[in-house]
Amino acid sequence: QAVLARASTSVATAMALLRAACRVLCAAARPKLTVAKLPQSLMMASSDSMPYLPVDMVFRFFPRWTRDKVRFFYWYYLVSFLTGLGILMGYFHTPYVGDNYDHFAETPLYLWTKSSLAKTGQLEENLRVKVHHFYPQTE
Image: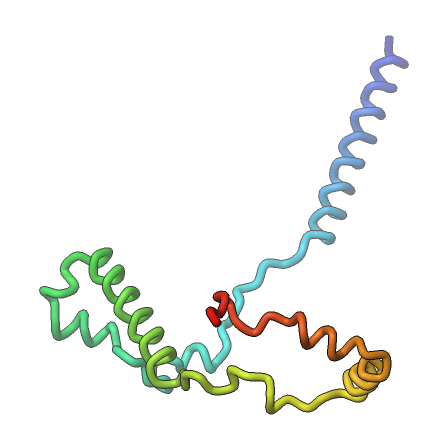
């Protein structure tokens, strides 16, 4: 029994050493957690940027408008989206510019294909059967 007790003690010691070695290896392999620093440009955004509508000033000077934060931000985002869409479609968008293809350059492949169709007579046939109007024309 003494031999059996000595063997179980050595097995327990070996297991304890193995456990300690695993802990050391896992601790060495685990990445060190560091606090991420924000970029300086992001830290200075409130002092550098010039927003369309400074929300902090709205919260400061119009407390009755911002009493319900969820409702305020819902309407703020809705008004901002519609203002941006209105500026984009009303001011920046020039209607009826570039809506035809007469000003595009014709590539050499297009010119070669067109001339080969003209030589065989297929171009005239294609132009004859081409539909030029969406609605049928009355004659």
